[in-house]
Image 1 (tube, helix red, strand yellow):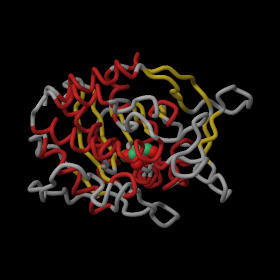
Image 2 (cartoon, protein in one colour):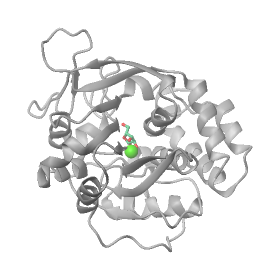
Image 3 (tube, protein in one colour):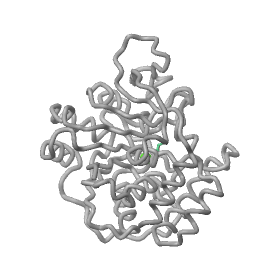
Image 4 (cartoon, helix red, strand yellow):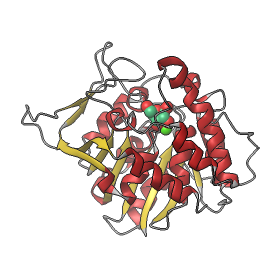
Length: 310
Ligand code: BDR
Ligand code: CA
């Protein structure tokens, strides 16, 4: 199986991503690292363990990472995810321990230990931990097989400011460092994730599974979608983060282009914007495979089938 580290700030859609990975035998989860994002670090570290316990997988190790962005105060998203970040189901206190090792050290150590080109980084939150790991041990950049990230937006614009997507906006310095690191990057921007909506018909199929993890996930999604449904009159919520895991399982669900991507870190108006050279109008190097389209029904069929195995 393909070795992955999931770096995350759960988040209901992060939970869906983690469940999709747990239900997929093609993937070997070496560890889950948490970062401050949707909610503060203490809460994302608790939430990651709650998700694992919903799935009866307490042997998967969770490492807490950065509690704030590299150069800015933390911005959180309780307005979308609720007070706990995982609002919806009844939440318990996790029984499984948090690992003592810092997430950044775990990432560095794992990439140095495993054979070069075998570990994939899946990032579902701000890129703080990855940027700190690269700063600490720049040589790991050449050892990463691929970094698949949920973040950014281009034709679609932003979701936290008109220009910026949340994960990049929270820590633009970290995102800028990651795009410059020379790692093969696959980017799942809002242009993709706004196409995978939790339509009623899709959620009903998840509900029909009836297992404990499926029930918890559906309760999370019922809460999560209300933000977009109430604010935008949309038919469901965008299920951002599981697109990262779906790409590893079925890349043919997605279509995109190799492009140059740069992150704005200075302008107050557009900070956190991912400037994607989609039309190849600069001579700048291609540093990411930027996705734009997705087979949404195929994506939900995959998610449903895999959550059904948990
Ligand atoms: C991203 O921000 C978070 O709120 C979600 O979990 C997702 O990772 C979408 O902009
Ligand atoms: Ca997330």
